[in-house]
Amino acid sequence: MKQDKFKVLGGVVTFNPDTSRFTENLRTLVNQVDELYVFDNGSKNLGDIEKILNQFSTNVVLHKERKNAGIAYALKKIMEYANKRDFNWVLSVDQDSVLDSKLVDEYKKNILNYKNDDIGMLTCLIKDRNFEDKSVEKQKERLKEVPICITSAAFTNVKNYFSTEGYDSNLFIDLVDTDICLTLRENGFKIFRINYLGIYHEIGHGENKQILLKKIIVHHSSIFREYYMSRNSIILRKKHPKLYTRKVMVNGLCLKFLTIIFFEKNKNKRLIKYLKGLIDGIKTYD
Image (cartoon, rainbow, N blue to C red; front, side, top):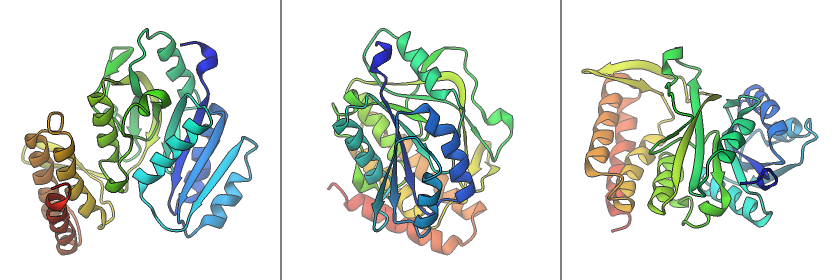
């Protein structure tokens, strides 16, 4: 791929962001992309978001949604915007993640050295701010094929993305990144991770815990997300039966259940959401 084929859109989905973290995020993002598209999902602090965006001279587009339409819907709209305006790649970034200032350059180097046109998405090494340095996965390969990656710091090939059905708006939130990765792979595209620490990421206020002999991370996410984690796990099993096996689904659901029982507060409320998600997941796509 030639250098002039790198027209990059930065895509950020906002929902009541922490303004200081959001500002820190944008400082490292705007100089790496040709245009920034911010999809706001009905934030209460929209005025603060607008003030922050006005600080940057880079081309910035702000889409204002009246209510929270979900992360999957927002990402789908970002990709549609990129396609209509002839962007080649989309760098999707969470509102509370901070990128390395040379991440896009590293992505470009790896793409230029790769001969095939089957890249669906690139990701990088990720450091979670909540945990020790050993949480960064090490690799020796310049490019390592991986089964899934998170959408934050993902570098998505627009042309190849539109050879698939794309993001599933019905998922709303949680496992949205897993779904798009499986969708890309089912259509013959690959997910690669470059050997570069490119993002500092944070999900909730996580803790390292252990269930039996398995080490886990408890993220203490919002209660309403228990519903989508269980429901969407069942939906993914139905959508991707070969790649998202019954064993993967059951293990994930059991681990989530045990995490709620042993480590979460508001256990009753969380279990109600979790069980409702299971029921609705079974009903969906029948």
